[in-house]
Image (cartoon, rainbow, N blue to C red; front, side, top):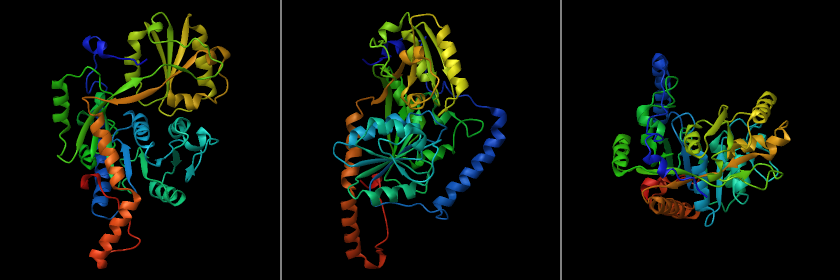
Length: 406
């Protein structure tokens, strides 16, 4: 069963619109100006070639943003994995934020969450047949992946839009519908990590977390406001929630449904960047929703677990705890959860779906790029270049054919 908020969007009580999650601290704008100057200097150094960007002889697709968290990177990367893995050998390379290790690590089924971070661990548990790796140095990580697997067809870079040392063939920029970058400010006054013109590096821009009931006029308003170049493709996606899943195997066999939550007291337990959309989507299904909200990637400590146990014990019955897939990776092995909590904590799986019948168009563009730019195709083209212009050819030169060339 999928939560569908189309009915909610017709009720103005629940309707949320673009920009409604944006809060800026105007008194910090002078610091934002200094921060922007530093970022602009860095970007100029890349554009002038002072800082070097590398291309690779394999299709590389980057998914990221220019804001601080909360745009839905992991569900979109997972969408790409599902799209490509049936026909191509796929690898996902992430930084592994907040992991307890260093350097390059290729995940195995025995690899722990602290070794690679919560999001890569989540993906490895879902896609056991897909290569998942972490490396803060993305260039080194790509080198390691291509050296270890000669059959690799495509590498997906998770959260690498600003990692400009790699030149991807497709650069996908994610923008939260409720926090459109055109209305935001640079850090620390806002949440932009670089000036708005950074979006010009994107080949594809996806407006994420859209309400399902957007009308044609609203699409046109957002499209015009984003002010993209002709070479950039704009898409819209929304969140879809699947049925609740017990976090522990000893949980109740009577898995609650969304329709059955009306009289249930729900504790929403999150450590993600932006839980507001989740709260909005769950609120219509229960009149008794309370939250324990922690920072993104929060590592739960003993005092946090004691708070959860205490809060849940004091809640009236019937009652459950709902958490996210990312939080579940950090909660599963944490000690101290009470038996009552373990029996009543459920994970809410999330996926993305394209709007305006854009799914087939997006899928075709991604598949075509990977198919046309396979390692063998690039090597063959390199040989043709060598024949036509021997003076320009270097056997060690690497390149990635850009999406814009297709």
